[in-house]
Image (cartoon, rainbow, N blue to C red):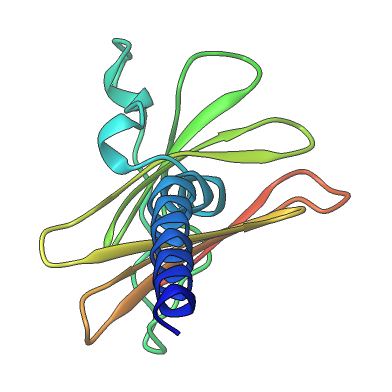
Length: 151
């Protein structure tokens, strides 16, 4: 009986150790694959090259609390274009081509937290502070990228 309990204990310890190694080894890789790189390693595209200040257009917030497009400032590169969207909860930088968009960075304002989702033909960035949520939606499934903001 003692020998059986020793084997069961060793098997349980080895299994627990293997599960811990897999959890702590695979979790960061899976998290980065789903949510992208951590904010500290994302490049800030808009601040890496000198550009002339582009004209800024803002749309006043509607009474319903939503707007369709936020402030956008393209960089001088012809294709693809980096666009910065400044919304209530933070700043989002996207690289847009004729057929797709890619999240470059998302920086929340103080007091806000950020969450991102991606799929085939779309991405979403949310900034929330517990009371309010600002969202940016980009879609490009069979058409040029379309960006909508809900503040």
